[in-house]
Length: 461
Ligand SMILES: Nc1ncnc2c1ncn2[C@@H]1O[C@H](COP(=O)(O)OP(=O)(O)OP(=O)(O)O)[C@@H](O)[C@H]1O
Ligand SMILES: [Mg+2]
Image (tube, rainbow, N blue to C red; front, side, top):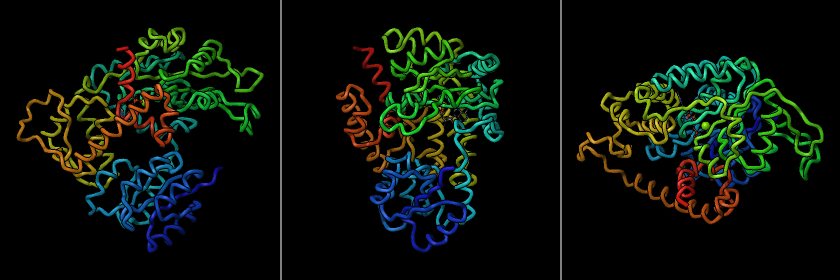
């Protein structure tokens, strides 16, 4: 088993001793640092189970501290922030943090937070756990609109037969949930569910993630690595963002789909696996095929059954259900007991168009809870033209902080767009030039919806 490590950042001396012995007793090796700079040094080559940061201790800028940690999100693990409940200046920056504890946290609260984070990601789970089944079932119960019930009917049918399923729909509609549901409803439910994000890494890395490599296959291949296809044997592999799959890997995947066979990188023998393939995309794959970006033969292999997940604006009746669900979940997490959304605000939520779909609604509710703004007075809902009943006088002027935030977001978006254009959308090079991690760049591209621009630029040219 790998050693469990915890990074403690700017924890004041008074809390530190008790905390250290508490974590050591629970088997954590702790690294204590006192500044963002030191944290960056440590995070460059060590990865942690989680990072605990005190945001009020000695005056460092909380937003800056969190930004540093986010740049190394892969190594920092989830972040537990300890913050002073009265410090309203922190509200905005806490949105990106997995867990917030109010100062001073009791050891019991810490224990709960750590236990919650220690739960493995669904993709890392082997046999289907009841725990995840419970949450999944609950979330699927929120699918009530006719279009979503239709999607559910198709996915239940598809789950029964061992065919490839293509899950389509805009970003944030719930394609991940659909994929996990198909696995759970299938006879493979006791086997592994393995997810691969086809857009998250450069081609070479993705190839070794998917197919593994033999020892000595290339410099640095010190030992044999099992790929995700092998790990998914007798289970399901979920290829997310399939539209971004590199052409060379499209060919290799086609071969696996045709023959169920592949070889590890540098391997001489072929391996055969018993895997059900699910793929998801928020791109128009037919257009990608027409434009020569995606192999037609692979598209037909993947698209045996298609489950289309409709956008949230076509599932309006689910909005209040989802909102209540997120309130319940996040009010508990952010300790705002009794938080409730008034019905007039719920009406506004139902009229909003949600280009970011369920993810956008979820983030909005999170913001409302963190900012303690059940009436939506501090958070402007982008005017989408449908919301015409709101009189201009009730429109809320954004705060200076909000104006600054939007300006900095716009500047960042522009810088990223320019760099992507300059590098011909080579995201590895763009990330290097912008001096951020590849992962951070992907996140920002998605967050700023730049990928949409890329496809519209292409179709215009
Ligand atoms: N029915 C639901 N109940 C509760 N939460 C949901 C539901 N559907 C989606 N979500 C939440 O919305 C967010 C986005 O969902 P998901 O990641 O499945 O979207 P996606 O379609 O895979 O988006 P992308 O194309 O960007 O990957 C997640 O945080 C997910 O937990
Ligand atoms: Mg997804």
